[in-house]
Amino acid sequence: MRACFINPPVRDFYSTSIRRQPLGLLYIMAAVRSAGHDAVLVNGHSPKKRVLPLPSEFSYLSDYIGHGDPRYRFPFRNYSHYGLSFQEVRQRVSATEADVIFIPSLFTPYHRETETVIALAKEAAPGAPVVTGGYHAALYPEYHLREAGADFVVTGEGEGAAVALMDRLAAGGDTSRVPGLVRIENGAVVRNEGSAVGNIDSLPFPARDALADRDFRVYRRRAASMVTSRGCPNRCGFCTVHAVWGGAYRERSVDSVMAEVRECAERFNVGMINFEDDNLFASRERAARLLGELISYQESSGTRLDCAAMNGVSLEQMDEEILALMSRAGFGELNISLMSHSAELQKKQGRPFDSDRFARIARAARKLGMNVRAYFILGLPGQTKDEVRDTIAFLGGLDVKFFPSVYYNVRGPREEWMMQRSSAFFNETEELSRDDLIMLFNECYRQPPPMN
Image (cartoon, rainbow, N blue to C red; front, side, top):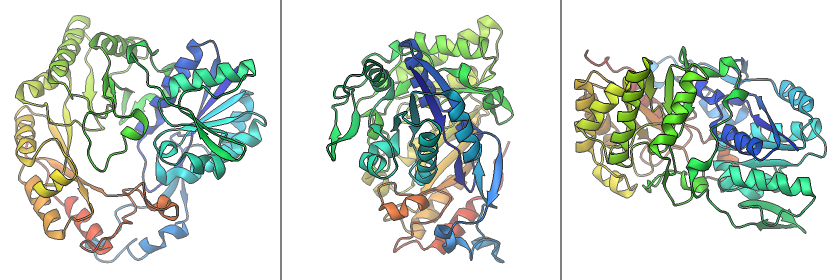
């Protein structure tokens, strides 16, 4: 059988080039190929951009766009379509002659783009069942089946489910034992029991050969994203990681990770590796060994890699020795999130480290010459304006560049899904109005640069 995997275009006020590497889809494509099926990628997230009129759902932002007072000016210029047009996606899907269509539904605010691509895929490949999965699909499987048009939803890991589903469909059998599959039978939603990959070293490396050369261009570098683990041992209150990966945290062996690093550097000629783990250094011992192997590989091969963890690094196992190894391994930048300077909010949200540790690590990284990008969440329920200013003052005293991530709630009602994105400033609270959110956001971007 032949499967078509579609990475949908997105509509937002901004986008990032890293989205052109749909790592989850590439993992599942590789598994499907290893099982003897064909798999092709339609990467709808291309460098193309088309400015769109502001949707009516965002009309509450109209007064802030181009505001005369820069303190209250909406910080983004346009709402745009990023990637292939929907018609181009349809044409490319039609040319694949696929038997099964896989479309991720990862981010709640992009659910309409997913709906549109599902409808176009059904037109382009009539009779081919459509399968979706990812964080949003795992949270709302019934919506995807009854309203978005999907035939199947995978609520957990996709590799085993995709292979089992294609095997069963090829044999004409039933799908009742496909792990993690959700479907409708006789009008009722039926959920199969899920199962996680026991040994994630057994998974084939992502099918990066399906990417175009342009998809490797990230911030003017030829880069590849990869993951060395699945899940996270922490339980931060605002996180949805466990919706897909479950409660278990699983690490790949360092040998497996290094084999993939070598493949990326030598087969795909990348000079930058971006580790996208939800918690890259959850184990200090493993972190030290992985970083040591990265250093040894570069020294022995004469290769110089820029390493990054753009998704952020959690600090509970971090210390000065690990930072020094990171610097030697090619990490010129450290991305870390404080969430909030408030000890009360840190405790309430289950954060695994406090402000003192954050400050110690940030200062140590700066002494090593690393560029530190620090983040906090703006607009958390229960957060006050005084607490936000306290967080800004705390970060401002650390000689780092810091950025607010505006709080959004993916578990809100469906009529709010489209606005649940950091760029939309949607969730006002009793303590923080939209004026406050935009004003405080803009204050952060007027900060002086860090000292050299």
